[in-house]
Image 1 (spheres, rainbow, N blue to C red):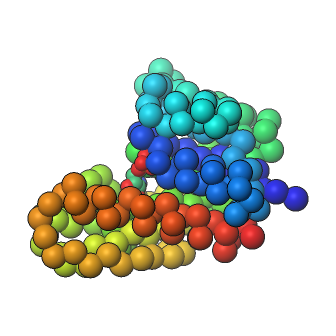
Image 2 (image 1 turned 180 degrees about the vertical axis):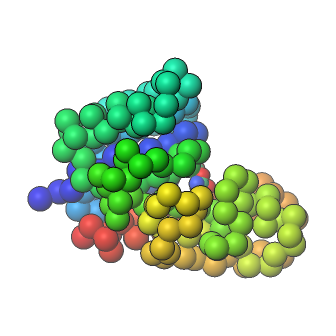
Length: 187
Ligand code: GRF
């Protein structure tokens, strides 16, 4: 039985697309049944529509609390039978409404070798620090900011200052690591 997964994203959605396509090609024993996006109109929504994947677009500030916002998401996840959640550029801390139901079944990808450089603009933080080995991490999500248990990592040596060049090295590696990690978790 294919596991039903949802991918949460706020931006361009290249990781979403890599995961969805790997599922469609049966490289992961899973099916992406929902894309959750907290920025209506973000690039990820176009990618989802092209792949015929349902999108739940929400405006968080139109809800009176995080619990109310996540309650709407939770109802949709339950309705669709979602068993596993991937965060892929989802720019929000997951709250207890979702964690109570899915802890241990929510993972995230972060563009640094955690625990170094959690939070926003990890690549910029690392560049400012002058690190020579960059990287990516897939980890379980808990109530902390990028602090859950690490599942997999990849190191990317880079001795330079060109952010675009570095990002062009990091992003394709993210897609590969996210897909291979999901394969190891879900079969
Ligand atoms: C990726 O760098 C990911 O590691 C981070 O947000 C970015 C999302 O990129 N959490 P994309 O929207 O998947 O292209």
